[in-house]
Structures are given as C-alpha cells and as structure tokens.
Image (cartoon, rainbow, N blue to C red; front, side, top):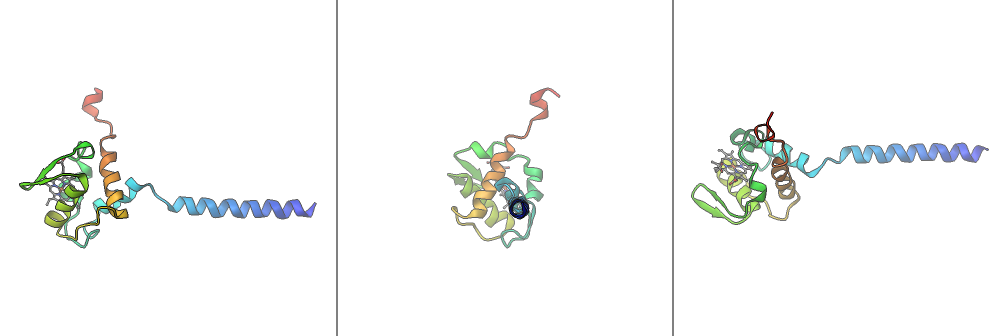
Length: 122
Ligand code: HEC
C-alpha cells in the first residue's frame, strides 16, 4: 500500500504549507497596532502611541461621525487619522482607501471592545 503512504506524506506537506501561510497573516487590527506604535510608519517622527498611549482616549473614536482636532472639523475617522498623521506625526497622509488606513481604522475600532474595568465593576 505504498500509494497511501505517498498520499499521507503529501497531505502532511500540504498541511504544513497552509499553517505557515496562515500564521504569517495577522489580523487587520494587529497590523494597525504595529503602525500605531511605530513613529516611522507614515514617514513622520512621532508615534501615535506617544500621545495616545495604548490607544487611550480613542475608545469612542470608532463610533464617532464628527471629529474636532486642533480647531478643525473632520467628518470621518479616516480624516481624523490623517489630521493626526500630518500635524502630529508629521508624516504623509494616507489614501483613505489604502490597506494601511483600513488597518489603522480596524485597530482604533477594536479599542472600544477593550473591557473597561471601572464600568465592569472590578
Ligand atoms: C503630538 C501628539 C499626537 C500624536 C503624535 C497623535 N495624536 Fe491623535 N490626537 C492628538 C490630539 C491633541 C487630539 C485631539 C484631542 C483628543 O480628542 O484627544 C487627537 C485626536 C485624535 C483622534 C480623534 C479622537 C476623538 O475621539 O475625537 C484620532 C482618531 C487620533 N487622534 C488618531 C491618531 C493617530 C492614528 C495617530 C498616529 C498617526 C495620532 N493620533 C497621533 C494628539 C496626537
């Protein structure tokens, strides 16, 4: 029954290939977090994390429709992110539809899901 052994081996190889491929893919919010913590992400000099440590203060941003940063009004989360990229990070604004912007938005939206210890009564 040599054919079975060959098939089994092929299946194992296939399985390994897939698990390696999937292990490399992180969730969008994880990629967003990496961008958030790296000062150089957008060609700037100050990480988002330096002013918003661990996303602190941005918990509600994922649900907001209108933002007001530095005396300017923004009508979307993406616009707000770009204002901070340009004015605070001193980097280059992102294309609103870019993968990086999607990852960043996913990270900011994930912040509201973090358990609020006080609200939960711990
Ligand atoms: C130099 C400090 C600084 C840096 C760096 C910075 N921000 Fe901000 N950010 C602010 C300030 C100040 C505000 C307006 C006040 C507030 O809402 O906390 C703000 C507001 C925001 C808001 C709107 C929050 C709300 O609910 O209205 C978002 C979203 C945001 N920042 C994302 C980012 C992202 C993403 C980065 C990295 C590219 C970044 N910020 C880098 C200072 C900074």
